[in-house]
Image (tube, rainbow, N blue to C red):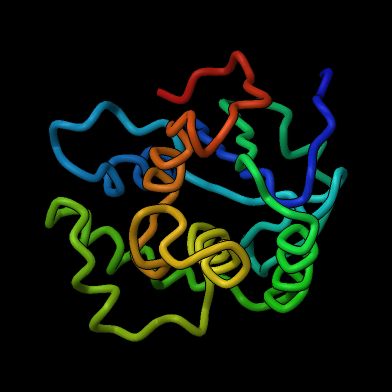
Amino acid sequence: MTLPELQTGDIVCFGDRSWISRGIKWFTRRWWGEKRTKCSHVGMMYDSENICEALLRVKIHPVVPRLDGGWREVYRPIGLSLVQHEAIMKQCEYYKAKWYGWWKILPQAADGLLGGRYVFRRLLFLDDFPICSWVVSWVYERCVGEDFFGMPPNAATPDDIHDACQDAERFRLIYTTEGGAE
């Protein structure tokens, strides 16, 4: 596997074929008319070799084994400053070791049934326990700018983050795998 040089803040999108991944992709499709969702998990680069992502806990660990298998895309936000890169690293350290909020999947699925509206997640005040998209969107909100992905950080799903990365004026695709995400 030949990787480009990765940088702090690069966004890593994952899509697999497991039943969990398929369920997340089905429930997080923003509108029923939207194209099939590819992305079921997101993380961000902590530095050139390590990724910060919410798994059982928020971890900072080597990215190379995580990029092997399945569908993967890495996007680079255009124009981040050195200060923003450093702030992203510090914010990742803040979230490190926090427990994954697995119970957030149910209200996220319920919101998906409402066409992606941010209703149940807002009512349940579940912000103390991160999920993957929560970590990425909050780090960017705090370090780069409010509503960086076009919505409140609490409302962003992996699909929303992937959709935002399609804006060629703000992001550049720097890596993709051949594996499909159906």
